[in-house]
Image (cartoon, rainbow, N blue to C red; front, side, top):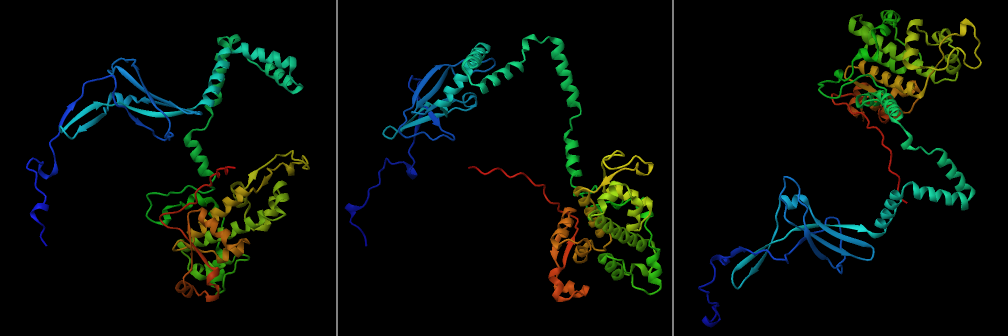
Length: 455
């Protein structure tokens, strides 16, 4: 439906092309009244607050040519003062303009507009700061007058406090160069032994109770730890496995008392059936693991405290069934020395002049960590089933898994296919957990103190 010609819009021959008019821009002359751009970063000013602008000559600096006038904006409420000042970078680098457009003439007039940033100040806090500055200006006169007034009319408690303060008062004016030099030299001597950042990092690493290890630039799990850092060659030289070879040649199943994990691994892998360097190495590791397990059970028993305190190494060696040399190494590695020959209740006989030792929780945690790493070395695929270890150590599955997590392992459940391959009944699948060491070990993050909740 077409509309009548009278109702049609007529095109203005003077209208701009595409709706864009030509604008003439010119810079206005400097006047005493210019617009000011105000920003309020992080400050919320009440709508009824009146802001007043001021100007004053700017103090010039060397090698700089700032504007000759500084602009300030001020406003206040009953409790807060608002003050806006120009930022140095705005004055020297950036310039702001406000444009006023007149649609009739098609002209835009640009006016220079300095930018000020509003900051707030609480009046009560400013008064307190002024009072404190006044006290500091008065100095000893104000303090001495207050002390005299308190000594004359104060309570017993305030009088004692004034007396203690006067006794411990140090007059810096009376100090000569010798005293100040001595203090400075003592500070330097005392701070020489302060630990550096590297020392603090090393101490934090030692508190983790782990041997040296790598976390970056490794391609397989065997590169995370070095076996020599976990168990030395000297320790393995005192571990014998000939009895296991004899039992295997006689066709007997090897049984290690109270060590189900070691017994299961020896018979499962069949290491004792063939005598070679690789099998001997792994058999020694398994034998050493059983020794560490027996040592852990002994150190956590009731009899260990007295036997360690009185240095009864013969009794300890008989319980663990190891050589005297290996026992000395293990006690030095997993226990700490306490006291001396003159410990309470200990005679001065030559037989009792032996180092007194004890097993702290830290040393016990170190023993379990090293034992977990050795269990990984004794496996082919760097995976350990903790089902038997928890019974050997008398711990819960969660606690044993935490030990393996401390050394960088990941925990996971065993799949039905793996359970079938390992001969594990379906009823026991949920009780088996696997700890795996990969080329990307994951160590637990150190605990941080929680921030106190606000009341």
